[in-house]
Structures are given as C-alpha cells and as structure tokens.
Image (tube, rainbow, N blue to C red; front, side, top):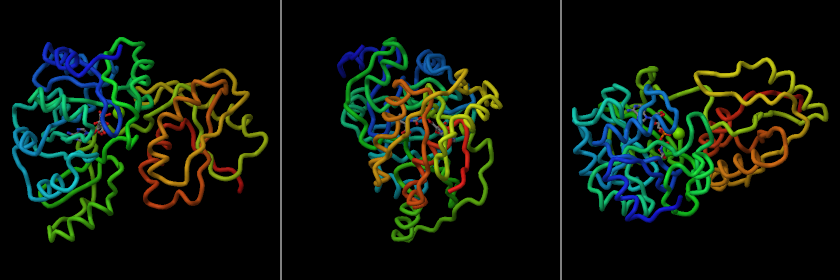
Length: 331
Ligand code: TXA
Ligand code: MG
C-alpha cells in the first residue's frame, strides 16, 4: 500500500513501522523511542537481534544527542558527507535502546539525503531506526514496488522513486583517532582518507576489526530468490552441469540465511552491467530482482577484469555475498 508522507507520520507516531525511500535503498522505519516499533522491524524482516540497526537523523545536532562522543573526525566527515550515504558508528548514549545496537556500546547513525526521508525526519523531530526494507538475507529494495512485493503489501510504503545510489551506505567505525570501514559503499575508503588528510586531521586505519565490532556481517546476504553464481573466466557450454553439482553440495542455510536450491537448473540469465560502477550500483538490486522474477532457473554474474578498480569494490562485495557459489573456469 502506497501512503502519503502525512499518513507515514501518523503511522510512525502511533509506533508502527513504514517503508521510506532513501538515496541508498528503501528503509523499514520506526521511532527509536518505541520498543514496539523496534521489535516489529526485527519481526517483519525476520532479522536476528544480534544485527544492529542504523539510526537516521535530520542533522548533526540530532546525531550528537545520541552519542556520548563527537570527535573531530566525525564532525568533519558529517560536514562533508551529510546528508548522504555515510553511516558513522560512534559511542552511544544510554537513551539509545540496546535493541538498536544489538547490545553494543556504539550506534550507527546517518543523515539521509532523499527529500522524502528528510521531510519525514524534519517533521517527526525524533530519529528513525531503519534497516533496508527486505527480508533478512534478501536483495535490498530500490523501488517502492520492491518493498510491496517483498512484504506482500503488508507494509505501507512512501513512494520516492528509484534510489539514486542503489547500494547501502558506507559504514565507518570511529574509535578515537582510529577508523575502519565496516561495510563498503558509495563513499570509498580512499575518498575518506584523502579528505581527512586535506583537512589535516590525524587518523589511522584500524588494523583489525573484531566480530563484536561488526556483528552484522554474514557470509551470504542480498540473495535473490533464485541462485546466483559468480563466474570468473569463460562460461563453458556445460556450465549448468557444474552448477547443478555444486549447488547440491551446499547446505540449505548458512548463518540463518536460506540458500535457494531448485531441484535442477536448466537455464540461466546473465547479469549485465554498465561499465560505470556508479551506474552498476544503481541498477544492481533491480536487476537481481528482475532476472530472478524471469523464466531462467538461475542467474550468472561474470566477473570482468575492469572490475578490479577500487570503485567496483562495493558492488562486488554485494554480488559476492548474493552469490551461492564463486567458481573459476579456465579463461
Ligand atoms: O544505506 C543504508 O545504510 C540503509 C538505508 C535504509 O539507510 N540501511 C541499511 O541498514 O543498510 P541495514 O540494517 O540493512 O544494515 C545495517 C548494517 C548492519 O548489518 C551492520 O553491518 C552495520 O550496518 N551496523 C549498524 N549499526 C552498527 C553498530 N552499532 N556497530 C557495527 N555495525 C553496525
Ligand atoms: Mg540490509
């Protein structure tokens, strides 16, 4: 069901959840002050409670109200990249529910750029927790209709057109003067590094990230409703025989994420991307959904050597996790 911004505000104020557009992907939003809404987000997504939610704010001062520290690195990065696709993970204040942070000491915060998300946050004056509006482990939504088909129209959605970036925000942990990318995104590590250096801010890349600092990292994620295979090298004419054999060896589930295992694969569709990594990111999730709804039994992504450029890393990270199997054929 498509609803207006005013209706979304009513739903949110009465502690319900609604899907809202952002420039990265659509989010399943609820008030951070409502335990009822937060619980519903996890329930609707079938998401495990150990995977923390990102909090969306209207501006830097609202973010500061949620954190017990606001280091210069955060100040500078927010100044440069907010509103936009950068999530900052910082030490939280007590008022931020443990449901949001999965019991961690830090909270992930971002200020979205999409005008609809901005208007909703401005009018509410309360931050919104919002994970991507898809079932846990599935392909993220970049159109209102993706959300509708994902939840069989049970979740009201505010229409906001196609998400212009198309993949989730870059998640950056800030630990005093150390930083770490917890999830790659549109804003690249190199860009962050160049910018902080140009601002004469001292920082170091954190050497290691512990599992507890980044709990939401599954081996499989973003998976379409039909198996996707990552192929490096040529696609031989008997590829489907290989894929059938490999698929049978896989478990039904990995870390709670269901692996699609049709009984036999007879046909495939090849994922096609533009040579621009930004355009590829924009069309990635729509293409995964479109091809999975088509007649083929499975999808193939063929890795190309030009994708070794760092700008491709965020798209490749999604494709690798969306793939059931990565195989190398002779080239
Ligand atoms: O672009 C985005 O970030 C979208 C839109 C809706 O804003 N949101 C999104 O949320 O991708 P979600 O829930 O699908 O991904 C959140 C991920 C977690 O799985 C985890 O990897 C990381 O962000 N994260 C969030 N809070 C964290 C925290 N406190 N510590 C470490 N990682 C955190
Ligand atoms: Mg997600």
